[in-house]
Image 1: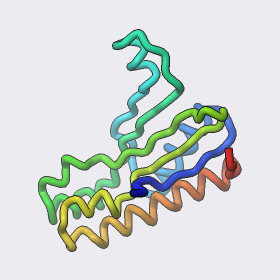
Image 2 (image 1 turned 180 degrees about the vertical axis):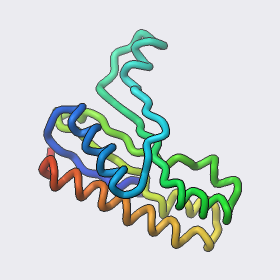
Image 3 (image 1 turned 135 degrees about the horizontal axis):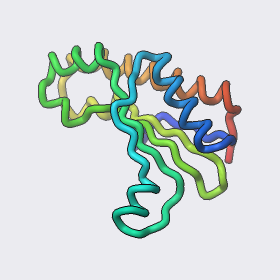
Image 4 (image 1 turned 180 degrees about the horizontal axis):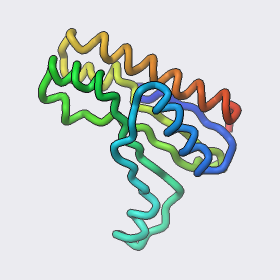
Amino acid sequence: MVYTIQTTVRGSFDEVVDETIDALEDEGFGVLTDVDVQATFAEKLDEEFRQYRILGACNPGLAHEALGEEIELGALLPCNVVVYETDEGAIAVNAVDAIPLLDLAESSELDAIGKEVHERYERVVETIDESLGDSDA
């Protein structure tokens, strides 16, 4: 099952994270959480790990609408976007695909919201590709 919208680009890790946050903001999403997995594993487990960030993104208007339809949907929010180093040295950006995510709620009232988030996340990924150059790495 495909559950992310993704791209892989070349560039510095921090540059890709910044570009991702900017592209999310352009589509009306704020980053509510920013988890540095590499730092967390180093601190809590004394383990090394590749650069890996989990950005918890939320569009307040769409979240309000979705929670109005399905109050328990908050368990699936925010919609995560991950940025990480690949084994090949490129940087991957994977955004959760809201369509299969919201299908978990089995509520047809959420279909239009899922489609809207999906389209916005596709534009986020396209923006990153245009800005940093798509790569097959």
